[in-house]
Length: 116
Image (cartoon, rainbow, N blue to C red; front, side, top):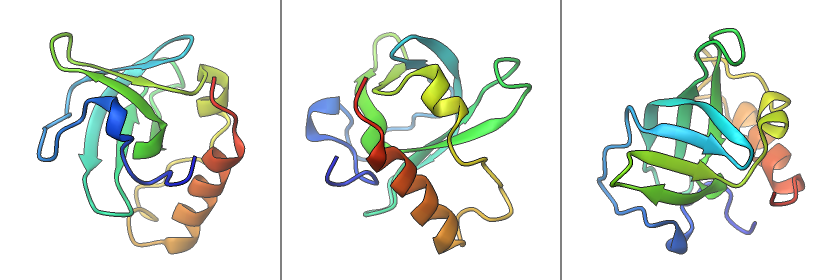
């Protein structure tokens, strides 16, 4: 993935689209709903509220992990498994978005992972 922090052109995402509340599906099942998102150039992401799946935690997913946005079903599909997402660097709202090292770690984690 060349730009993990940018939406893939084929994902069906249009600029300015509000993704808050969309369901999020990993390649092997549901992981939660979008709590917030950003369209910042070079730093786009979604934050997913995992509910009870990972004990109510939030995860940060770079926009490059989004494979498809289904506006009719209000669902975002990501190209990672639940296990890959569960093992990602822990989301810390106090370190996000200002901590560049945190973003570097998250980006490096997802760039290393093969597409599922």
